[in-house]
Image 1 (cartoon, rainbow, N blue to C red):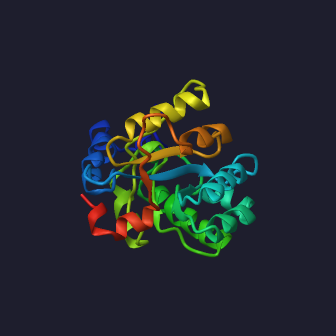
Image 2 (image 1 turned 90 degrees about the vertical axis):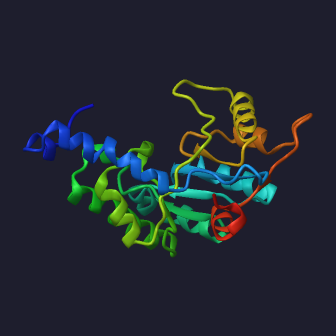
Image 3 (image 1 turned 90 degrees about the horizontal axis):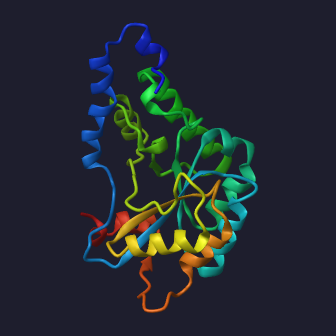
Length: 229
């Protein structure tokens, strides 16, 4: 991975390692999953809003009466405010996925703050409501990230199931992976920019011999003490 300019300007490799890799120890206090005792999942969608895919995702969720959480990229939200508002009007939760979806491993403290604060502001302006959660791109954290997210009042939320792959995967197979992995109460992460409608259709349809889990909104789950570990 190419090192950030601020590192090349003087930070040592040991400092960079502590600042990036070391920061992942702090994610132990972040939200990863719900308790195994509750048969419920939360659906989260990253990287939108996208004019090609987000409307199809919203249509399927509306048809199934399911609420999800959309972690939006600030720059994309600014370009598609109608979609950002539609997400809120449909009752879904909003999350901040930074301004430009850059890896926070490549960002010093000042750049990290700009990415998170600018993303938060752009999403709030486009959607007419502020994001309630934060998720770093690719789950890559640094030590500066946590304080900024805390000041904005946006808990850091990760995921425990990601049925996608680096290579193309058929919708039915993505649905099978997600259902199989969600036998523990989990947060399932999908990227709505790349999500094809058939995947969500498959995942939300009754499966032979599989008991359907309750799908709860992220906000509802975090407000319910029974959903917290």
